[in-house]
Image (tube, rainbow, N blue to C red; front, top):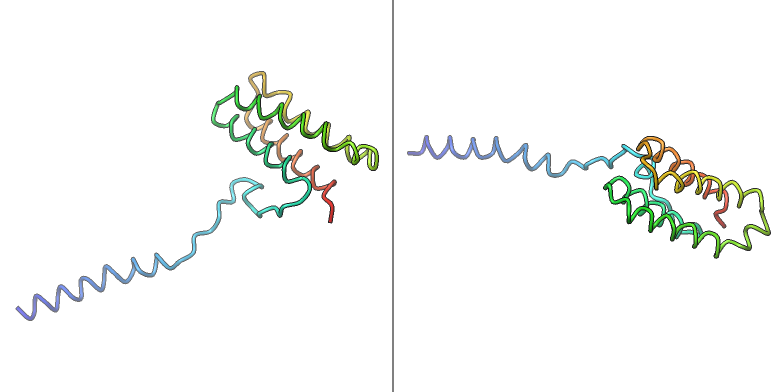
Length: 133
């Protein structure tokens, strides 16, 4: 009987130890997309980043109606809230506006996922030009 108890204890420890060790190992973050690589702090461009991310997520989910709606919200928000940037830095405003247009215009057609992702990445990068410190 003591032999069986000893075997059971050894077997339990042999199985439980790897489980406990693996439970303590940190899981690396998903590095599949640039947006997941590093969290972006809140700043004056955060609302546009959020709307663009929502637009992209809807597009990836094949919810074209929502993608179009979010794209329109993004465009209206940009055009109505960044008049000061347009006056202060027309070149920066224009670069961001053109990148946004390149991202949202093809959503109404049957765009290539890779092209939409690339346009999104470019738009997000251009937004950094207008971040206020």
